[in-house]
Image (cartoon, rainbow, N blue to C red):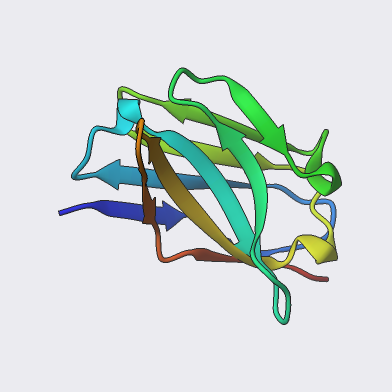
Length: 120
């Protein structure tokens, strides 16, 4: 059974830090690129950060550059998102995504999300 389980969300004051984790199981984690998305209330889901199966970071949305860091531990089948200098506009549900891109089609798995609230 495929599972992506996010954890680490919560309430934090502006300027604070959180580290999100996404534990994967039920599929070959090392074959998948991993991404973090977020969706704020009333807004569309946006890609926050992406890391290839080889551990190469390929993307950060401009609004988080210099503050967020994505990483992965293939031995633990886990991807992380370190979030520093958090701002109220970072408030959102954060989702973990696993993507396998084959020659013909792609496979996507999603977690249920973890809520991050940045507020004083």
